[in-house]
Length: 386
Image 1 (cartoon, rainbow, N blue to C red):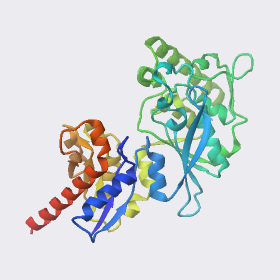
Image 2 (tube, rainbow, N blue to C red):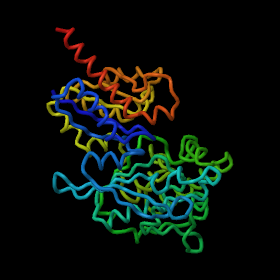
Image 3 (cartoon, rainbow, N blue to C red):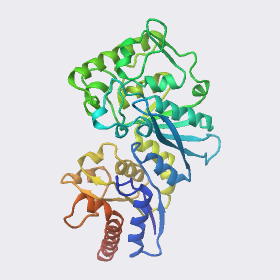
């Protein structure tokens, strides 16, 4: 019997690989002789770099870059060697590592001044390392600058009326008069960029980057209006100087508008994060000859069906006719929504009343027990069905 274990991380508790290892340990108590294949997965957000490194034997690169407030921060990205030949080195970047909201104390959160320059610096560093394929996860950003800082780090000149470079942040876009992309790093044109995002919001308008995501980044209603006006100005100048209308493109508002910059300047392609990751880790190949897939995330609920890791795993498994079960840290009342999307059954690791802190601390032990019980039930079901 072959069992593929393909979970996401349990945030603040266990990496995806640790989750997979705990599930394997529990199932081995029931099926010691089964073949287990651990394939850590993620959905393009937090934990994507680590999941890909763990699944592919890649490596983590530590870099000091410009943080969202213009101050140095310690960031990172992942490098995955080409396993099949011909495609080149893959860089996996989480925007949040360099330009993330968690890097900004709540009292200092202000998307008028926060910048994506550090994300551009991570791209530069990866280019220097030889990467020509990129996956950029754009969740968790502190920014609303339309990717302006990233572009400036890559050589694009964003000029004010006097011909000087505009400053940092979404507020500075009010001074933008002209875009000169002639000095964009030439290596970018020879690279492939995929933007991992499930966000469908446009760049501007009532459902745009500023209106929907600005408040969580510190924007008041007045600031939201200012940011949206600035992004409209930015989009208009992009259309005039680059010939591309990106204002209303679905997904362009992801990452505070950095997705719009990726589309126009880096020829970036928007794709669901879990789809990118399952391809990169070779999940389809791992499923060859499998009898069961076990997936999971910290909490399975009604939102899991909206592009979360278990759904991505279930879609791949369905194409190969392999049944899927899910094990989560906890289950919401509406967790049953996943049954209509290919996950046959779900189980919670937490089995007794406890605090969140206690659940996180005992995550590995709880998972092992839950996986052992799931395997025992499956074995019992097989006997009863004879």
